[in-house]
Length: 200
Length: 200
DNA sequence: CGCTACACCAACCAACTAGTTGGATGTCAA
DNA sequence: TTGACATCCAACTAGTTGGTTGGTGTAGCG
Image 1 (spheres, rainbow over the protein chains, first blue to last red):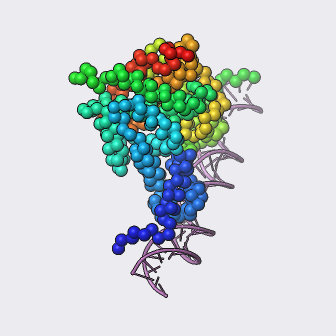
Image 2: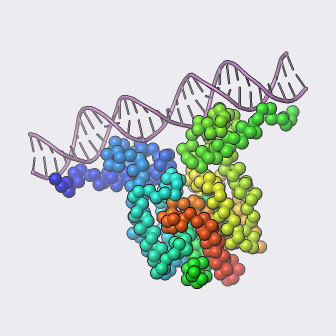
């Protein structure tokens, strides 16, 4: 009945496929990724992809889910120190450019603003972030967390634009990180609309 | 010698192709776009694309160049009112989601941080923005303009994430616009590092 | 009128792709 | 040994795609 023991090396194969797929998808996106190339990168037969994941799209979902799980495991909630949150999150994205690209490919591929099934985990995570910022969170709180996330993500999303604006100085990732954090800190110090004052 | 009079309707054909390509590229990206579909959308023979633009990639370049020219023509420099700049720019992106998607596809397709040939116009434009913010602009000034741009772009880049954070309230684009502007205003009011105070 | 440039149309090609299939080999557990 | 599963391998299919070509129609210019 139960099948506990993975017979040959199924978990290793699976992990190799996920790692290879992460690189391939980050490079070329869902449509541009080549199944044969993923198999080759993983040193695994192409047919195994279908055995494990069904099809290319489901493989992509598995890849991005894994990557996001890692992020949430490593980054603390914004809580009462949003500037620190922005600094840590920016650093994480700078260290994981593949994740940033995966998120962009996903955003472009799955059109529409509708929530896809299986996104409940993300909704839950984002809600937790918002909740950590205020005891009685409003839409304005959520917008603030959203923009803080943008501050952290944006530099890694558009490295070419950073280069255009900054030239050689674009290479100084630490400076960008500190700048984003300072930007967030300054903004928060003032109290955004709807946060604490002028509650209606 | 000169050939002033466009014999049949070459400018109209060209314009139709550009408009159709804008939609197709925004929807599917460079790799995902289908040349036949662009021709069909434009009501023009596929062969005309190659006559006018050479190949798919050059067509994409023409599309994005045109779109960016329109933006720069309509949006004033940040100058001394960055919050207003963010508000106006956010509104522009909200009104032109295709442009946002084109920029994302481009960022993903042309890897690396190297500047591509033909980007001089963009470098010039960004330099003007930075220069308008300070009489003696530094790298910190450039980083600030860059992050302000991010504040305006991000909500349109990740509408699904906005939905996750905001739920139904994600539809209120005006609120997001105002929030981003207020965020920028609050941040600027405090003086970012390297801007005016503590100059070393 | 002839020349040129543009547009239309349809067929064509060579290359490539996601996904399938069938069989051979090896490995664990009963 | 037998059965169940995982892997590898190679060939196959059925459909798609960017780009080309050749031939026809037509509008303006000199």
